[in-house]
Image (tube, rainbow, N blue to C red):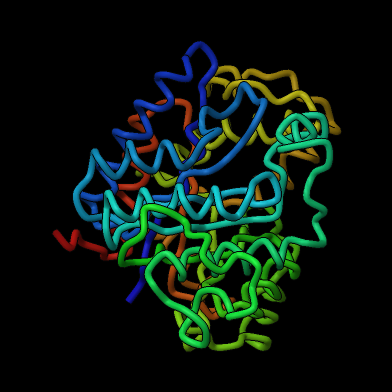
Length: 346
């Protein structure tokens, strides 16, 4: 049984606004629930004119309020920027508001440039990336403690300096914890803590199957998860014909090219992408970019996803689709849901 999820970066189109991008996020989430998608994840990006999603914990609330049963979460919280206690408390509020529906995906990436990373620092010195595993451990301990677990059952050990300090509001339920990553480091941390792991294929296709293999090989059972649980995040564009899918995908492909050239902005129109004066060097880059995602008919994309899942040993796919027009994005997710045979659990 295949599971389909959505990763939404709340893209801003050229000529559009951030308010429009967030309204599109809410609209797409409602469609996703109707179509049978299992999770709807919100990304974190900073200091960018490309994406409106800088605060996933806020968007999670908006999406969960606009839907009734689909799981909603972060894809992901960039934990090095934040105090584990603060992330735990945001998650506790969301879990209290929407019990049993919240996912907490986290990652190590900054979600912005170095200057922005410095501005996000909580004080004169940022958390070193080397302490990321300790941040993950503290976050889990705060979440477990908030449900009343203590000692060997969970939470903090008896000698921990944070004994008696609680993430509030306290109560039952812990968000489902996911580690997101595009390489081996995130996979190993997920394995160490017995968390679910989602591999960002759309970022690092060249990593092959190694991240998920590392994850499974080193997985340690935890209170939350006794066996490995993996997913793969893939860039997908689906349309009625292969030609139309590639035409729609040209907008995102041009944006990715500009991103790699350090001049990304809002997402260009299809017409701009098709009429763009590509140099020979641009065309070489563009061909490589086109290989990083799947664009085609429902049958073509279904076959490629199933083959990818078999190679990586997963049957859960987190789908990232960015189009210039919202109707094309909604239609792409509709066609994929039909092709993969998922239905709403409502």
